[in-house]
Structures are given as C-alpha cells and as structure tokens.
Image 1 (cartoon, rainbow, N blue to C red):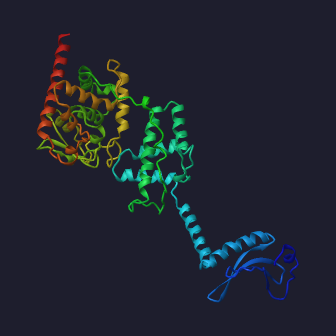
Image 2: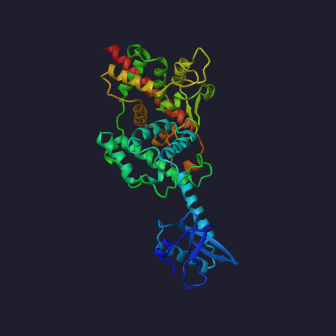
Amino acid sequence: MLTVNSIRGLKPKDKPYYEWDKNKERGRGKLGVQVTPKGSKRFVFRYFVEGKAKFIPLGQFPELSLNDARGKQKELGELVLQGIDPKDRIESVRKAQEQAKWEEARQGSIKQLFDAYVAQMAKDGKRTHKAVIESLEKEVYPLIPPAIKAKDVTTHDLMLVLAAMIKRGAKTQSNRVRSYLMAAFNYGLKHDNDPANFIDEAKFGLVMNPVAAIPKQKDAERVGEHYLKMDEVILLIDDLTNEYQRFKMGESIRHLILLCLFTGGQRPYELAASKWSAIDWQQKTLLIATDISKNKRPHIIPLTDSALSILERQKPSHDNAFIFPHRFNDGEHIRLDSLSQSVTRYREATPQIKPFTPRDLRRTCKTLMGEIGISKSLRDRLQNHALNDVSSKHYDRYEYLPEKRKALESWEQKLQQSITDNVLQMVRV
C-alpha cells in the first residue's frame, strides 16, 4: 500500500514506471504513482474498458496529497462500477463548463440592452427614441457601468439611480427614467426567444424585471390643467397675425401655431413632420400618415377655410417636400425646439397672457371646443387620441370625416366671431 514516505522514497529509473496502491476492491480501478526519469511523481488512475487499460492523470505529488488522490480514485471508481467511462464523464463535464463560460461571455451587457431596446423603438417609429437613450446614458451609466451584464443588475442598483435623481429634485424625470428602464428590461425578457432580435448573438439571460418592485413617485405626476381662455387665444391669434415681428417669431412657427389652433389642437410634431403630398386640396383634408402618427394610425383632418388660408400662406416659393421645412436643411422638417423657444419669447413679451407651453394649446382647444358643445368622443377623434375600447381598436374604421368637419367649422366660427367681437370692442374703446 502506498504511503507518503514510500512515495517520497521512490527513485527515478531510465524509463517511467508505476507503483500501485494495494486495495481489495476489484472493478474500481487503481491509484498509482508514475515516476519519471527526472524524478517527478504524479498520481494516476488506471481502469479497464473491454480489457484495455486507460489512464487518467490526477495531479503532481506532493501538491496533490495522497488522501486527496485516494478521494479522486474513489469517485472515479464509482463511475467504473456503474459502467461509465470516467474519461467520457470528464470530457462531458469539461464541455459543459466551456459551454457555460461561452454562454456567460455572450450574455448581453446593460449597454447592449439599452441599445437593442432603443433600436427597436426606432424601428417601430417611436420618435422619442433619441431622448430615451440620452436619458438612460445620462442617469444610469454614472452609477452602473455600461459593461455590466444586464442579468446582474439588481433592483437595488436601479433604486440608487432613481434615488439620486429624486435627491437632486428631478422627481418627475425619475418617473420617466423608471418607465424607460421598465420597458427596456421587459424588452430584454422577450429578446432571447425572439429570432428577430439578436444583437451580435448576445442574449440577456433575464428571468425577471428588476424595475418591477420599484414604485413610481405618485406625488410627482400632476395632470396638466392649464389652458388658455378664449380671450387669450384671440390675443395670441391677433399677435401671430399682426405683431409677430415684436416677438422675433419666424413665419413658419407662426403658421404652425395657427394651424394647430384652427385644426382643433393637433399635435405640433405631426403637423411639422407632414408633407405637402398629404394635403388633398380638392377634398380639403390633411392626412397624418401612420409613420408620424403617435398612435400609429392614420388620421384625416378636415381643413376649414382658415386652415387652408394658413397653408396657402405657408406654401414655399421653392420646391420642398415638408409643409414646415427646416430653415437650413431642406431634407428635414422644422425642429420642435424652435417652437418651444418661440413660445417662450412670446410669453416673456406678453405678461397679460398666463404662461403656457406648446402642449397647452392642445388642451386649450380640447377644453374650449367642449364649451361650445362638441362632444368628448368627437373631440377625441379630432385630436386622434388612442381609443382603447374593443370596437374602436379592432372594428371601427369609419373616419367620421363629416362629423369632424362640422365640429371644426363650429370651432372656426367661434374663433372668428370672437376675433370680430374683440375688434369691435377695441373700436368702441
């Protein structure tokens, strides 16, 4: 039987040789020590398969102790007794470990997750995709390295990101970023099983959404309530028609605001991104195409005489596809930040009008059209709100064009009458 001392006493010979441990357990293989001509010694396990001897090296002596070598011999001997070739088992374990390492190496990072999610947003025509990736990169990467595996990001990690935003007073924006994170991780949960969404063969390996347990900051979400009163709307229309130079407001911006008002509060982006080809001058309609519509459904807007007059004045002297072209790039439409900046300058110059934003114009039209008796359902259709009842979503494809035209004509009449009353009042004064 091998002992530590007997192993140490083994002398090198001209050729390698073996000394075997003595045991009475047949069919389990044997533990041995191989001695090389240079005097090195290593433990080996010998067993037989169909009468042929096979050897498995276990480790060098004395780095591997005799007791540990016997432990390995016992494990391998059990496999032999079960009719399993230990070499085959070792090879299968090795391959499994390599596969696991490979799977781990190709696990997608949080950066890959964000990039893939935003790429899908862009593919789906979501115009906010640039703002989303900018927010995620700005808020997340300072606290969570971009290279970290998406599956290793914890709820606590993301909570720290949002807590930092709340601490600096950006509570409302923290809710926005939370929603972006929630959507990105939900995308990642489905990504691995979707053959259309492979990114460099990366998989995210997500089993849960770490954002789900983080609550929204409910006190930060306030429903917008501000809208302009009718006399403020009339003053705004008058200023945009006659006093625009005082506010340093370009012609296209003035026309865009006026068109928003006379079309019943359409989304500024959808008008700004529309092309002349979307206008049917004979039918007096403007089609908001699917690719620019917020709810991805086409939207036909009846054009009143006032709206047509605005569009006639907006017609360019040169050929351009966009109704509201970019000032310096004919291949792009006007930027919405130009609209925001112009409205800000107007507000500063007209303290008699309560502060408002471009978004408030939509609410203004919705509210004032309600005051003159236009039903909410028709106002919703005029502003192309997403209607979520089963009938509207799946069956109702009627455009309600006559009803919408009648409503906008009533709205135009109200505006024109208010403008006339305002002029008469100024004359009397």
